[in-house]
Image (cartoon, rainbow over all chains, first blue to last red; front, side):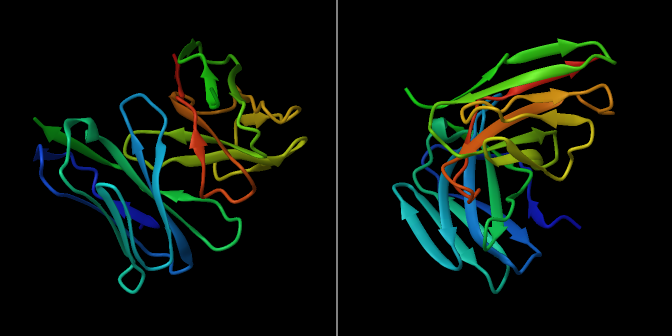
Length: 111
Length: 113
């Protein structure tokens, strides 16, 4: 079983929809949670990061962490065609430990 | 214009040849990383360096080598000992030793035939 599980998709939604992207994990030591966006044939870019449980909002993006369920989510409101990309979740324990990445969910927003 | 550059974007090599992938950053970051990305798998850490002249093996270091002679440069050599070298290689850097805030380069697609 992988430490981090992420549905690969693809996920297709109409423009303007609310998108929910999710990851589950098994390592209870994970404390820092990140979401990266990766366009085709490009490097990932950091979208958001959160520490421990709770919500964090940045514009149309909201990151949510539920440590009791070992479940994290990224919500995208008013989705745009430019949001079409692969979204990678990532997480790590406390201290300067390596980051574990999910496999990514491919999102397509249809105009 | 600060950032991370990787060259070349596409690289083709014959089996049995060593090849070196370039990674340069002008962000003045202390730490640098090399990852490999394969379809259906998450990014896997090959090597990382938290300071000049020091580097550590990641999860899949076998068949790879690195050097960190300058703060801004972290080249990766894929040797002939790497059994399955065809992949998308990503270089990243972070301001300090904490890897959560990593900035990635555009990647190099290596194809070995």
